[in-house]
Image (cartoon, rainbow, N blue to C red; front, top):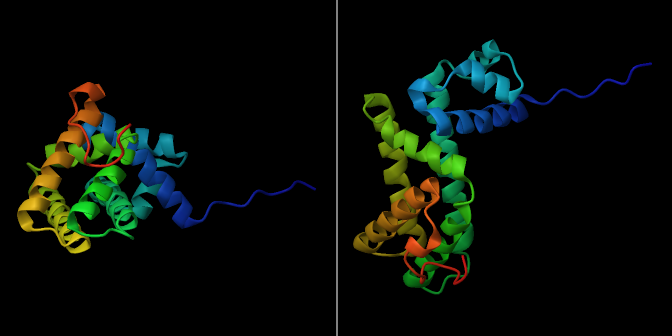
Length: 180
């Protein structure tokens, strides 16, 4: 008797597809990434992509949501015991620095901004950006200006991380851990 292996659930397949899509979109951008390459990377057939997403743009937007969602989760977890807005922002900064190791996610996030010439992509990416801004404000109690400066610093680290800029070009903490 041949043992049958359990098939991955639809949720698992969707997660694998999103991870594969993040990698492809990070490397090639929205327009140049191919659904054939994404399917191959995910270990699924190309038609299965369209069983999960109506089109490539919907898949791209889902990858952007996933990347921003991971940032949101890291931020929320980091401020659990914060003693005030400054401490919360420092903790969030440290959490973001830890995310810089995920180069493909950084590049995928930047591809969302690069593809914002498309009105639908722009609307989605803008909504995620504003949502993240508002989450930071709500989680920290920081002023609008403090949040704007925090987000601006995060953009620096996103770009520096995506480009693999050596740390000696980065600003020094108080954003988080001293030896990152």
